[in-house]
Length: 135
Image 1 (cartoon, rainbow, N blue to C red):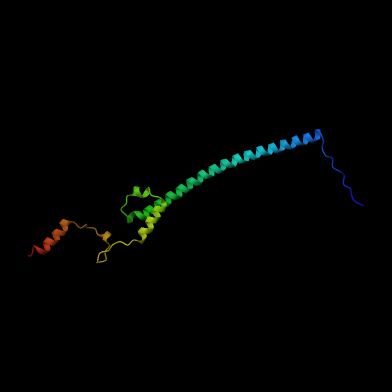
Image 2: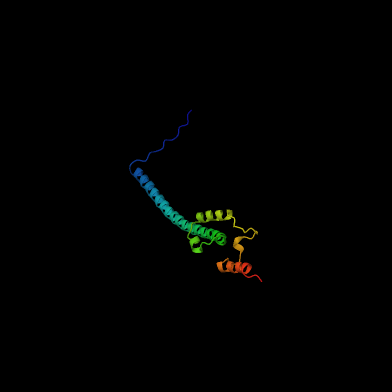
């Protein structure tokens, strides 16, 4: 004994057109809903992209200002020149300056620490006192 399943009736004529029309209407409604969702997501993506750019710019400016603060005491370059440089160039300069060693007098005093600048008059005055005026 084999169980026989009842045969499904295939829609014909008006029934078939009605089902097709209902399916088309359903698909069109679904399509419209998906398009609206895509538009919403596109707006969200655009908003998030703007926020990401703002955050990136803020982080870059903060990084730049920290590097400039580290570099400025070690160089005579003006701040406006440093601020126009890219972060990569500033990092490169920072690395170079970190490796540089300041020149030192024979006495061990760093040359940058001298308070009195040597001038020709000052040098001549000291020389004159020691050689020409013997008391």
